[in-house]
Amino acid sequence: MPAVRLSANARNVQSTVGETLTITVPITGAPTPTVKWFKNGQMVSASKKVCFASDNIIVVEPQRMQLQIYMCTGSVTAQS
Image (tube, helix red, strand yellow):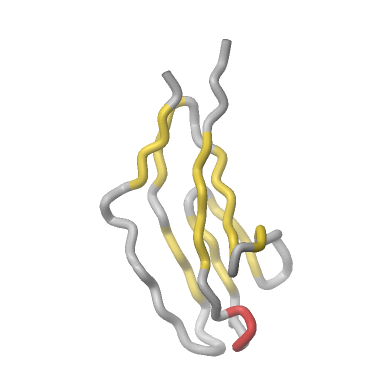
């Protein structure tokens, strides 16, 4: 049965303008979950200033408009 588990280590993170922001949300599951990141309800795409690594999102030198509420989802697809 597919399952996604969010680590109890997930927490709120705060940053300041110009300070690289790394948010880590340990998500595990079987099969391996697909993680999607959202900022203020809109899906975040990779760019020169935003990258993803496993269960991390990294915002390089964020400006005021990038310091918002980030959330992620993890999902798995049942295999037949």
